Image (cartoon, rainbow, N blue to C red; front, side, top):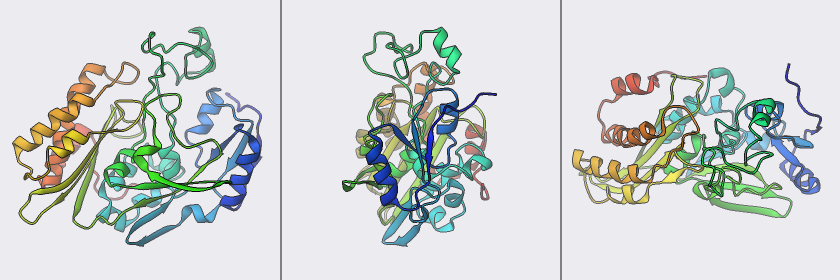
Length: 345
């Protein structure tokens, strides 16, 4: 049995109390939401906080208000998002992303905020303490060298969150609260392209909510590549959203790649190439080529990096054809091994 290290445990009932605990911990505390990522990491000694601040007892973090858009508490369980018909209709990419995270049991525990703040992953990092010690550890924890690229000055661990690309494509913003106050930022700005310092959230801040603006006129989708049809982390994620005019011309577009870098990558040039044009095969192919150029997978997760980069072009094409209205159910079942039919609790 792999045991947890010793830690202090606090269970505040308000965000203000939780923020005060973080402020007094001087960087030695971590937040515990569903625990599906943090607890295994603690057992492997990848993360060893002196203090855990549990958020599950804070009711305000599980609120969902729907007015001019959706405001989603960071403590909402992923299964709650999947059961929400309004999110299914209006924030399809988020619904699809949440429904493909892990398994029903883990979605019933994992939270939206936890998935957004998910630790970056790497074949050299996600191992037992003894395994990592045998290779003299790695830069991300206890070592000085990135074993993926030994000359790299930064850690190349991979961003593996599913919900972040979807929310970025939906134009969402995040709320961060500390004892010093509140700040708002686009979800895209929550991330650094650095496997060690992958979040811009400070250690004294709590991600409390995500706001998705009014999606009237927008269509969105999320496509995920992994070896199995469930459980696995993404080795490629593609989130796309378009706003179409009545004649089918793209008025606005967003395209985001996940799991091919240490942060979600916004494919600005690819999205811009769609604007003012209908979603023809030619326009889709051009956007897919432009998105392909920014995909930078490394040899630190499942499948070969060359193949993962190559299929990024294909998956962008699938996503855009999906938004065009093509029947992609057979392709999704064959390629993604996930039908997205029914609700996944």
